[in-house]
Length: 208
Image (cartoon, rainbow, N blue to C red; front, side, top):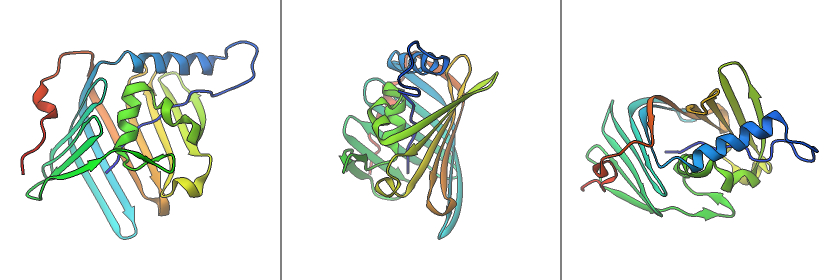
């Protein structure tokens, strides 16, 4: 399980006497995330492992409500709920028992990949930028933000995080978390809505 996200750059270029285009774009993106009170979208998730071999594609929906609620609800090919409420993480897969974890950082890094997704929507992942070197590239239709750990051994199995954002709207299109041995987790977002009322039931703790 991940998690996301999703992650963003803060100080892309330092020491310039005037703000660069990249810096202004990064600042505008972070400002938009800070102003995001709710977010929901159709979600496609891909888990790819090379050792042992495994490739799983799931579809469902993602919900975020500021400041600290996140829900990933998958309905295909099986049912799975991943719910974050503050520091509590709940995972329920098909007929398995409900699992409960406490979100925390250990040795200055996240213990659950979903912490990236939560931080992405909260503040553009500014709370994790000290862990990464970041590059930003811009095309006519997209901004691509690539994060590579400053200390690779410390962040294993994470190798990099790549986010693709709509330009100029800054809407998240996809997030790819690169892992060891060419493994990866990707999230693709579509039909998103932002700052619209959400049903509280989306964040309900799954029953046993």
